[in-house]
Length: 326
Figure 1: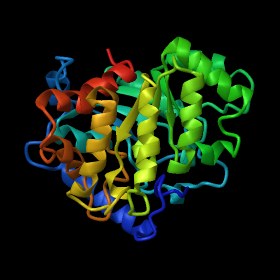
Figure 2 (figure 1 turned 180 degrees about the vertical axis):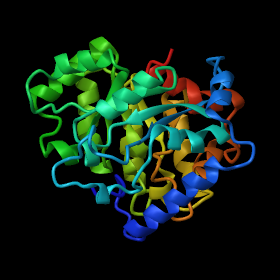
Figure 3 (figure 1 turned 90 degrees about the horizontal axis):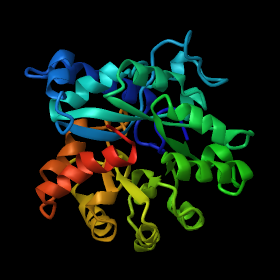
């Protein structure tokens, strides 16, 4: 895992990432007809209005209040700033009003305070998927405490936790606690991790679980049937969900992302729209010719088998239910 993305992107340099993302943020924020924050608040007075981005990262440009992980400096931030307001400047023009903020362990590790502070400032706009170090005692108590601060899910990552990431007492405690609290366990996993994740879902059938980014099926440009089969097997667990997200990193990795439609159709047929949710994975969707608009328009405009009701689930209602927007 590098500081540019949760995926390996050998075809784009850090400098290109900085320049492209910064230009995109500035350009979209200045678009004629873009909604201001005040206009957006007025629109969202109706809770049924607007879409939900189920997966985006944000971070501040300074480190005085929110220190970075040891060994990281502001020079590692790419882009150097991507705050909640910068995200919403991109999201509002395409109809997104609420966002699930994902703890970015590359920069802030297990310190969820920046995301929690954003939730405190805008509790109707955000929910948080935080991180808890399951290798330390008391993970269940930490989860319950965070639940009171907008944290309705937890990211679990093999790359951060080690080879035994699912096979520790602390991780078992997290899944058991999540069954009580309703907080979703969100796996940032590879196709090779799917059998272990499947086993964990089987052991904890009452725990809501979410698989991020199609379990990275297609990250090397090849969408293999075996990987997709292993992902679809998990649909037998009724509380499992999949984020159809991070298009910039999968398949051809280029707009309009139509090459991902067959994979989405397979998941749609297996999980149903009520267990799928769209997400952008910003700011990483804003690079190398990709855009926020191209990501969401794949769902709104380019998939002919989706009904209007299906779009409501993929773009709002699934995330609304799983991450306890109310």
